[in-house]
Structure formats: C-alpha cells, structure tokens
Length: 231
Length: 141
Ligand SMILES: Nc1ncnc2c1ncn2[C@@H]1O[C@H](COP(=O)(O)OP(=O)(O)O)[C@@H](O)[C@H]1O
Ligand SMILES: [Mg+2]
Image 1 (spheres, rainbow over the protein chains, first blue to last red):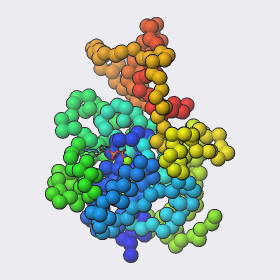
Image 2 (cartoon, each protein chain N blue to C red; image 1 turned 90 degrees about the horizontal axis):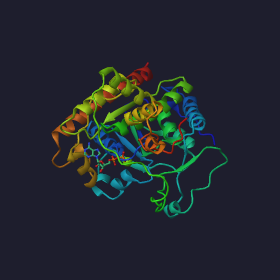
Image 3 (tube, chains in turn red, purple; image 1 turned 180 degrees about the horizontal axis):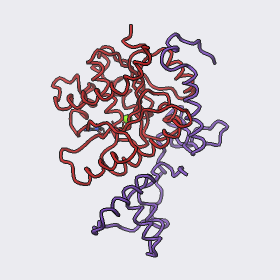
Image 4 (cartoon, each protein chain N blue to C red; image 1 turned 135 degrees about the horizontal axis):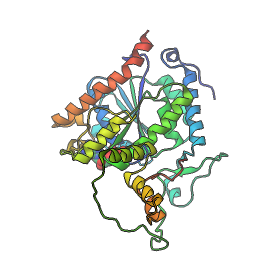
C-alpha cells in the first residue's frame, strides 16, 4: 500500500558536477525515510556515486524501505513509461552533471527538479542555463515545470558579494528554496560512511533541522498535485 | 513497444503526458543544440572513441566528457594573467551589469570586458571567451 495515489518523482540535475546533487538526494532520501516513506533512488550518473554508496555499504543496504538501482543506458522513453506505471511513493533521480537531452527528458517528466548550486556566480550561471532550457520545454509542453535552485555548501559566514548574489537570484525569475544548506561535515561524512544524515549514529541536529525545513518546502510544492489527484 | 496502461494513469498525469514530456524535451534539445547523452557500454571505451551515434544530427557528449588527453597547453594564444581591480561605479550601473550578466547567463567580467572592447579599448577575444561562459561545449545559440 502506498501513501499516495501517484508516486512523486524528484530529480537532481545541474549542468555542473560537484554542486551537491548526490548529497542533497541522499539528505532528502533520509528525511523521507525517517518520515516513514518508501524511497527508490535511481542513479543515472556514470560516476555511480550513489550506486557505489549503496552497493559497497551493508549499512546502506540495511536501511528499511530504501531501494537503489542504476539508470538505463538507452531506451529512456520506455524506462520512464514503465517507471511511471509501477513506481510508488518517492522516486529520486540522481543525474550526471551535464546538460543533455536526458537531463531535459527527466526534468520534463519529474514532479520536481532540484538544481543545487553554490553561492557563486559560475554555479548560478549554470543553474540559470538549466532553468532557461526547462522554460523552453515547459513552453513547448504547455505545462509548468517545477524547477528550483537549492543553495548548497553555504559557508558559515556569508560575504557581502554572496548576499548580493542571492539578492540577484531573488530579483530574477529563477526559483529557489528559501532554505539554505550549509557546508557541514554531516553531509560529506554520511557519504563516506554509507549512511544518511538522518540516520547517522550521532546526527547533526543543525543539518537535520535544515533538511526538514527544506522538506517542508518540497511538500508544499508537491501538494497541489496530490490534491488534484485526490479530486 | 507498448506497455499496458496501468490503473494509476488516470489519476494525476495521463500516460500521454509522459510521451509529450519526453517529446518536448527532445525537440528542445535538438533545436537548441543540447547534446545527446551517450553512455559508453563499458568503461574502457571512454578513452578511445565516442560511442556510435544513432542517425541524428544532434551533437554527442559522452558523460562525463572525456578530458582531452594531455593537450599541449603551450601552443596557441593563452588568456592574459588577471588581477582584481575595483572601481567605484554608480549603483545603477552595477545593477545593470548584474542584470545583463544574469539574463545572458554570462559572468559580470564578460559583460564588462565586452563593453570595454566595444568602447574601443584593446581587449583580446581570448580573454573574453575565457571569462566563464558556456562551460559545457558552447552549444548555446
Ligand atoms: N552541504 C555540504 N556540506 C559539505 N560538503 C558537501 C556539501 N554538499 C556537497 N558536499 C561535498 O561536495 C562534494 C560533491 O558533492 P556531490 O553531491 O557528489 O556533487 P554532485 O552530485 O553534484 O556531483 C562531495 O564530496 C560532498 O561530500
Ligand atoms: Mg553526483
């Protein structure tokens, strides 16, 4: 039995690598799992960050209600159709750091696409490129695409330039999560230890708090669809 | 290949929407030169040649894009060394630089250098193209 009528698909996509796609994917997975949801992660990245995290860690494999698989090499259309037909609860799609047709296809179909970015000009420019392509797809499709930037690895002390850059984002038509994900060892550690921030032996309260705040925003974005589905 | 329509389809998004989403994404990718992702069948292949492409005109990117093997950096023109330089500008000009950089998806440095060049200052093209735009292949129109 699933909690929802339709599964929720959240994709993690950015033209750049190393911005925190896999990290935020795992953080969100942990939050969902600890809220009693079932989570299926599909790792589309050839570097197999999450697949390795899972397949080499007995701790990760023992996490209840979590399954991980590698994405397909081709026939993406069929894969998505099949996935949409059979998936339940939450499906998290972790993509490679590249802007390709695959990225657009996944984002076009996902319920929500998250593009992590550091508070730095090059990262925001890349996130902006992604947003513009998705605008084009949405216009073609005649349906809005949920695409939000997640500011990640925010340093403890934000400089004036960084504050300005955040202001610039807010002045533009880019959407972003209000929650900032700070640079914390809790995120990098959970990776190397085959666990999740929410399931660490000594959880970092501040990290959990910001992930939960992010999850509240995610739920609000996903909710309207849920209501439509119930009607 | 037709899969049987699952019952969940009549709730929320219809099956047709998936097909349409994929088609729209592919169209935009084709029209705006977004590369096709080709996953090499096995990793040894990466360093040799890109995987064969199906009959499409779309540029192909192997993910991750293979680094040019020991490209001789010494050859050809190189960007000049840079140094940070601050000048006091009217706030609205700073704002305009921000906005222009943002809407074009390029760095502020690029916007400024192009304006200098257009204003008659000697600025080499290589120093402009090294200013951080189009990091992924320069395919954008
Ligand atoms: N908020 C954060 N705090 C600390 N380290 C982070 C954070 N986000 C990402 N990292 C680290 O940065 C590196 C790249 O992150 P990753 O999620 O693998 O990026 P991507 O999936 O976008 O390539 C990893 O080593 C990860 O541990
Ligand atoms: Mg990754």
